[in-house]
Image (cartoon, rainbow over the protein chains, first blue to last red):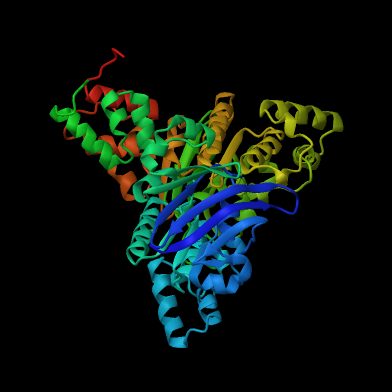
Length: 280
Length: 283
């Protein structure tokens, strides 16, 4: 499989001297679905800003589709990698919701007809069509986040980075985001999700990267990482809800099976109730 | 007398023909821990903005019915006056921070109340200690983590000694561990005697602390009561409330195993699970 993103020994030091990234190594293949978690200040946002060249490495290399980010422009990279940032306020500058979504499409030179078609489609998809003529700044914070997503998805990049998309979203909209990520993934898009919403991760992602203090401290299957106390403590993570329940219950059979989701716990519990799970 | 008494409140934002709140009636009693939840756009933030008069005084709009804070009608009291009883902590601490040191931040509100210097100094010392942030005294608030910033905001509000603390999605920008700790702090403040109102989505972390819950949908109260009774109800699920997964799980197995009482915390859920699976208390 083709490498979408390759990070080699990446160090980043902010102008104020803060060392935000300390030797990151990472490969993300085309079509992969990867979640990045870690406490505030772990370096997650600094890392993703390297993916579209907003930040350039202090040391080390970041390649996107084989191209060194230092040798190209943000505008060129942006066509293939879209980042939906967590604070939409910093992202909007149009007077109307419609224009906000159309902006990048116009910049990339799409024909009028295509622009109209795509803007309509994404606004409907994100329940924002009725707000087309409103100012982005009059939306609720949940709606603003959806608008930020709509404006990126409208121009159809190959890699999509979501920075905390589920914050402030109710369950219906979380479901919608989940469905949308699934859809994008089935179209072969590479999805990178930065989040604190560990319950959302375990239900949707099979690769988890854990960051702490500028380093990657774990990279692998969520099941192995989330039942590993040492990693959890180091990364100040709290367990997802179902593993939390299993841990407190101290039931050996469940601890061995390591269920991550409601469905997995249900299967394990049915096993015990039917008697083939063994009480130990 | 309830501290906050909302009586058949209907409210329209300026220029809007659809009410943001419709026929809301509720009471907040002294010592309550009231949890307000509901889907985005359901009116949660709008509702709490009526508790200290920001609505209608700052936002305008059409305001029908009334809100009484300690018996005083908010329409005829200033926000400054009401803030002495009700302090609100919003979700984005950055938008609430005004000064360049934690100490100055806490002093700001007190100076506006016109308190003598000596009292201001005493209150600052007390809240720094009470919230365990003495070490942050000289720091620049905007350079702190979100969790610490929120604590500073809480300190600056507590210093003014309100009776009710309102938190509007206070943990929205926090990582899970910071959120957990912050909600523990809110619980602690409630135990120390503050009346608390919290708007929150992370019910798995907060529901266990609340004695009352209100679910809003489309500007209306769809259900209110004790969290233990409300969260397992179908109506909570139907409104898009993020019902804790352990409650959803026990609902799903409730036709296979008898669930005598729905759990409201992880620990209770673990006990219920052991009971269901016959792992009794012999552990």
